[in-house]
Image 1 (cartoon, helix red, strand yellow):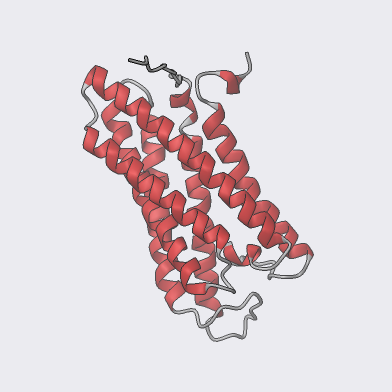
Image 2 (cartoon, rainbow, N blue to C red; image 1 turned 60 degrees about the vertical axis):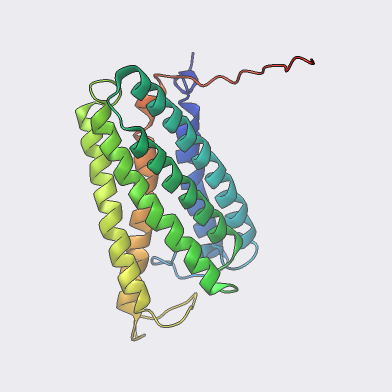
Length: 238
């Protein structure tokens, strides 16, 4: 048996691989076509022009689907653990799932509405994605501590907390500095008045994105411990 065949490991593993490829492929194509600057463009900028916009939109939608599946599997695992051990509050688990699904919705909006065409809708989706995604990570870090000693080790709990804190700080800096950026441009020059705040905002956006990726990577040990099964029941005709 391969490592990804244990339990539900394939879900977070596929999510990590696909989401990383999403960011990297769009960036490489955009750079090749000279549609964005090499030095830290916004992630959304790499998917603003065709054909990379098509690639970005498709891969982002698949990422949202995989993230939803991973979050739901995690929710069911924590729910069952709470029923057996009573260590995790169900309200906390429900809240985490709700925030996670809203984050996935924001991700779909970001991938569907390009920054240069529908700026306000795109920015709203980005705020939903990053904002609720950060709080999802925070709640999951808290749940990880409540689950101990079953599930994650103390080291993994600390690692999740670190990624959650990093993503929170980076998101706040990205949002604040993003409000100071004037206009939506795919190419910027160091001589631009807002170049420094743009660069700071873009760097923090990339940090948040890959903090999410690495956060889901820490789910792999937990997902080895359970499996989900679908049970079909036929209704009897009276």
